[in-house]
Image (cartoon, rainbow, N blue to C red):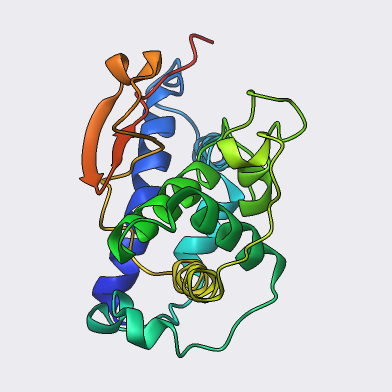
Length: 220
C-alpha cells in the first residue's frame, strides 16, 4: 500500500478523532506541569478512541488486497473468482443477492457500501452479519426487508449468487467505497419512506435511491 492510499484510509478515523477531541473540555489552567499535561493528553486520546468503532480502526489499518478499479466492476472477472464460505462474506452476499440482484453491478456494489458504512457507525452493530440481521426476528422491524418478510433466504439463481459472493469478497477486502458518498440508507423508487425527507440523497443506481443519515451529536 502506498503512502497516499494509507492516508486516504486513515482520513475518516482521523476526522472522527479530531471531532471528538474538539468536543472535550479544555483544561482549567493554561500553564500545567508537563507530567499533568501528558496525563490529560493521554486521557483525551483514550476518550476519543472510545468513539471510533473497532471496524473502522480495522479497515484503516488492514492492508488492501482487492482487484484494481478496472476489474472491480467487471462482471466477467468477478464471476471467475473462487467462492468464499467466510461468514461475513456470506452475510453480505445474502443481502446483495436479495436486495439488489436485479440491479447492474454498480447497484449491487452500492448496496454493499451501505451495509459496510453502517458497520462503521456506533449506532449500528459492529459486524456485517450484525447489521444485515439486525431485528431479523421482528416482522417489519428488520433493517433489510428480506430478513423478516417470511420468505426463503435461499439463493437459487447460480449466476446471481456467484456474483454477489464475489462483490462481497471485493468489498470486505478493502475496496474503496466510491459510489454512494457515505450512504447509510436506500429505498426503491416505488416507495417514499418518511425518513427520506430528512436525509441527504447521495446517489441513484437503477431503481434504488441512496441517502446519508444526518450526523447526530450527544448533548452529554
